[in-house]
Image (cartoon, rainbow, N blue to C red; front, side, top):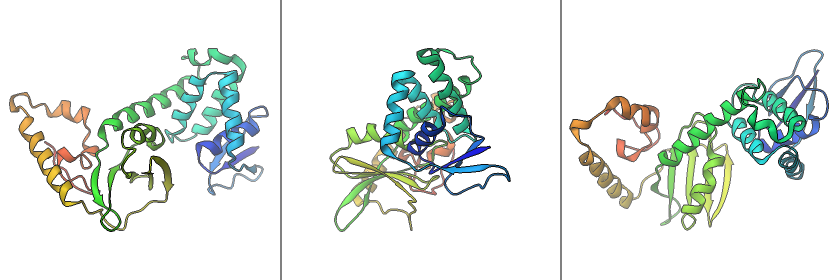
Length: 260
């Protein structure tokens, strides 16, 4: 049985799938250096290649659909166990049925992929509203906007275009604390950095402290006590995210936020 080893990136997955999609189904996928396979397994390492990934993307769009590619991309970033094999089977089916794929919602090869994709889409939508930047000291007298997040899925690739468009004139960082990776934007160009760990909590600028205090005061005074609904608030703004939301208190990593 063949097991595919790739670097763990979506680009790497496209390369691995492009190599195998017209052959026998692989027994599984390994990300990075993990896993050795069984005694009778053959582990095939596939290098990431941008040109190969682009060519396979174009094939998916041409022979299946752009929507199917978007579904596969979102589902991949769910990081669900075994997602690679689910996507391999989904794309294999897509090359057989073409543009009918996305409409086959009850098919056992389609349904789980679409469910994973929707899970990521919902979290991306949520974090477009949950990201809270604060101005922190950066280098010398310079500052940048820093936002820590802890999403359940890997949403950073989908947040990049939104914030790059709206904050193109200032350097900023969105730091996924759970995965140790970050989006860094400077001069309108965004990079995805991996292995990002902070030695300490970034120090806010004095101006940021003033603005945060004003915003917290406004948020507190805006509330109408008679309409207070903690259950609905927990549903719309889960407790696990509040330590990074300025209006709920200290937005620094590791801050403890009391339930309102």
